[in-house]
Every structure is written in structure tokens, then in C-alpha cells.
Length: 403
Image (tube, rainbow, N blue to C red; front, side):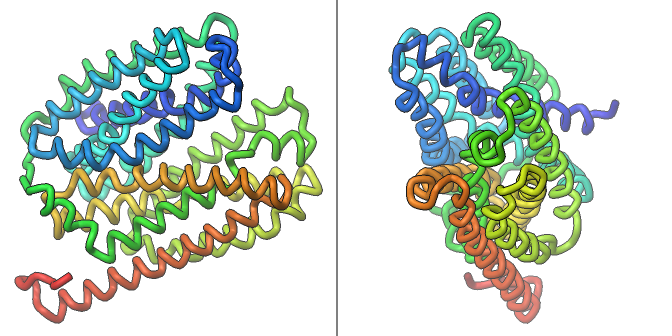
């Protein structure tokens, strides 16, 4: 096995580790509620707190640590992540669990953005999109395999051992990274102000909104995937794990398809048609839910296409920064994960509101609105890219485009 393949596997392992830590709480909420003697509705805020802290802290941690060696920074952040995850396993109260989740959330976003930066640095140009899609797939693999294993451990032993298992995986990953990461890679230093100039580029801020609404589209219905399968479609609770497993496998396939598309030139130009398909599917969902076959089929197709933009948008952020904002490369790497988490919060809140307003069977209508907004901002992103390229061509290769 060559060095690049080994590095790629370890980067996916990092994503799997982070995914297990982030998603495990969803599967063990009931166990945590019993242990801490806290109502399930309050325990559920652990998910919201994690997503919010993740989204808010990542840009600050990323920008403030950019002046230091990326090699040392990544290892230091994983060390803090290890402490936070282990604290979750040792937590004796709800407050301590909240604090531990905040510690891991503070580091998780910066860890994955640094991993993305290393990936873009070491990967040959023609393999970058594939590696990015596999890193995203690491999170899907965590939800398909890691989380069910964690839930099984929690059910048969204790939820604490699920966190201890993640800590062991973190230690193994840390050791592997020590030996496999390039230690001296070229870094362009920049002040905080210079790094943030990236956000003033319409190619970036339109893409940011596209990412946010992509996530909101998904979580406007996926937040209630279990009741959609059981209450709306009438599947038994015994078949629920298999159905979720199938959805997870399709999610992994979606990540790979996303990588294939990202490897094509101007892949973002293909994205509006996928979001047009999302709009149609989400508008048809209330009717599809009248039948188990049509309802489950439409959920599978949505799973395949709703986040198809993941890899193309990440490659877009990386390429734009590499070309015009090298001092902001790590920040650019974090934008997708930051605003995806904001989108999760927005979509989840919308799903809850829609359930109260129009009922569970019609919550997809809110997702259709977000899909339309995602499509709009993808179109605006493509126009901004085209305008920039035309201006650059007109000015000549040696002149800087005025943004």
C-alpha cells in the first residue's frame, strides 16, 4: 500500500471517529435520560448544543490557530477532543455531559477542516475530489455502522463504554497521524482580517448559503425519519433498524456519486437540476406516504440526491482559496461543515414547526422551500464564478481581479 492510500484511509478514519462522537448521542438519549434522571425533551438539547457550538466555534478556532504548524495544531486539537470525549464517558451529571459535548464540538469542526486541508495538499489534482468524498463518507459510515454498534454496546453493557470505545479509536488515530502526516507543508500566513477577506467574495458567500439550505432541505424531513417510517408509513419498530441501515447505505453511495461529479470540470453547474428534482420529490412526498413502497422509495431517492452537492461545493471552496486566498485555505476548508451544521439547526427547527402546523405527513413542504433556495444560491454561485472568470480573462493572467 502506497503512502497516499494509507493517508487517505487514516483521514477517513478521522471522519468516522468524529461522526461516531457526534451521532452516538442520538441513539442513546433514552439511556442518558435514565442515568441523569432528566426528561427526554431536555436530554435532546445535547444534539442542539453540539451543532450550535460546532458551527459557532469552528471559524474562531480555525482562524486563531492558523499561524501555528498545521501538523502540531491537528494533533493538539485531537488531544483536546480525546479529553472531551472521555469526559462524556465519565460524566456523572447532565451539566458535566453538556460541558464535555461542548469541548468535543469546539474541536471537531477544526479537526475536519484541517484534515480537508491536508487532503487537498497531499492528493494529486485528479484524486482530490475522490478523497474529499471519501472523507464525507466517513461520517455516513459512522451513522450506518458505528452508531448501531455504539447503541448495542450501550444496551448490553453501558452507554459509557460506547464513549470509551471512541476514546480508544481516537488514541489509535492520533498515533497513526503522528507517523503519517506531512510535518512541513507550505503555509501562507495572514492576519485575521486577511483571512476573512475570503468571505467577501460572492463565489464564497453564495456557496455558503447554498450549503446552509442544502442541509436545511435534508433535515426539514430527516429529523423525523423514524416517525415517518413508523407512524406515517406504518413499518414495524422491529424493521426500523434494517430500513435505517438501507438508508445509510444509500447515503454512502450518494457520497461516492458526489465525488464522481466533483471530479468533473465545473461540477457545480450540474447541481441546479438535482435541486429541481428535490423540489418535485418533496412536493410529492405527502402523496407518496400513502403507500409503503412509494413512500420508502421517495425517501431513498431523496437520500441519494439531497446532499449530492457536498463534494463539489467543498472542492469549490478549496480551489477558490488555493487560487486567490491561500492565507485562508484552512478557513475555506471549514466553511462546508460550519454552515451545514447551521443548516441542520434550521431544518430541524422547521421540521418541528411544520409538524405542529400541518402534521407529520406534510413536513416535506418546508424542505421544498429550502431546496428552492439552495437551487437559487447554486445558480448565483455559478454566475459569480462565470463573471470572475470572464473578468480575469479580460484583465489578463497577471492582473488581480477586483472583488
